[in-house]
Length: 176
Image 1 (tube, helix red, strand yellow):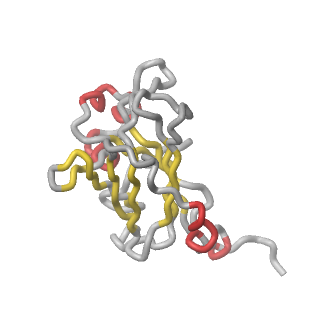
Image 2: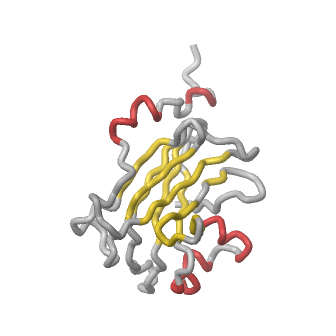
């Protein structure tokens, strides 16, 4: 018997079975000023990935981590590859160079076939500090839109943001 893992044994399609009970997609605890971020995880052919897991981590409104606001969420995609989080818009946090970063949410993507999770960010539309964010500005201009959520029907509280794993509109992923 071989002890080398085959591609079908790397992670397994177990997210819904093993992680559903620890899903946390509402980080607001009923706060009135919430933001809904909804989207899909799509493969290179534009087909939904139905067994991915999306984790988010963010600061509170004042740019602080672990300050009474638990900025951590986790949700599995559904049978349409869809996910949704209800959260708050985080404040600006200092980067490694001491400069304040634009409000953003850190995102990890786990799924069958990945030996290492994918790391990305989602930024907020019409945020003036996006223009000075060191991380966002390090991405080629034509690719930045993959990191910025879009308002749904002109609403600042309902945002759309998809994770595209490959292809022409592939989401920017970071090496961490």
